[in-house]
Image 1 (tube, protein in one colour):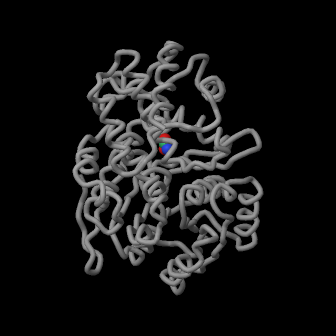
Image 2 (tube, protein in one colour; image 1 turned 180 degrees about the horizontal axis):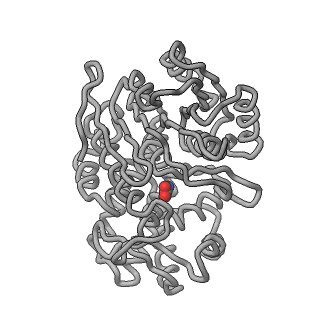
Length: 375
Ligand code: GLY
């Protein structure tokens, strides 16, 4: 699956992303010295766009660059607040003042909001400059940093403006996870377990056999989970970068949205107070129950969803204010971007995803009742 390499005393893995703009994802510990190799040759300036609460970590990254490059360090607002047109404009102005050229490079340091905003700035400046992502959360490592989706939010919704812009490299330094709050790490496992169901059942075996190790940022188990989840994402995006669809009934990149239709509705219902990975966990239970109600999967696979997500401490039930009709209405708005029917990614079997379009209303109701019963 991966090519092991050695950086100092720490071994690292390099996962190669093929396609039209190939790049490497490096996974390991103490990896910052590898950053210049990902930035590449012939670069004069590096714009380091970092999450504002990571001042010290940004300082460490800057220290590895100063001396080789002129470094412009820009702290961004925390979380989703970074993903606005105003923040993007501030970045563009700063790049303009420095005469940032097409041969210069953007480096992002932070969670998914930072990689989304920084990737969008890189995609749009001079119609595209290179970007290297350094994700600092589990969620960003296994999802946002890989695959080239970038974007900002508008008043009408999340990620409505953006571009596909693949990075020039991704550095997943697992040391960042040592200081990540436990609940953020667990939320990131929501996307990891999802990858197990849609493509790599070994992920489920690892989680189920040692859930404590899965939550331990220093364990080899978590490292293997990160590597396997990133490999799942790589395989999917190489086959269908722009989410135009898969072959032979596979949903293509849309498979990564397993559990996300309900997850987005739940996130919206909570005013985005729930963590994304927690909402994904509940959303995956919902689609498993929907598939069970529709006779698509049997009890064993449906029940395995509950036990796998719950084993690492993720929520498997919904007890919020929004009722069935409210969540259905939100999901129905979401569906407009794809057509006239509600669409869900479901499993025909373990690691066999497909699209279920226009499900029976009674099955949706049964699935909703099931997630409220387990709250
Ligand atoms: N986060 C889903 C995707 O990258 O397509």
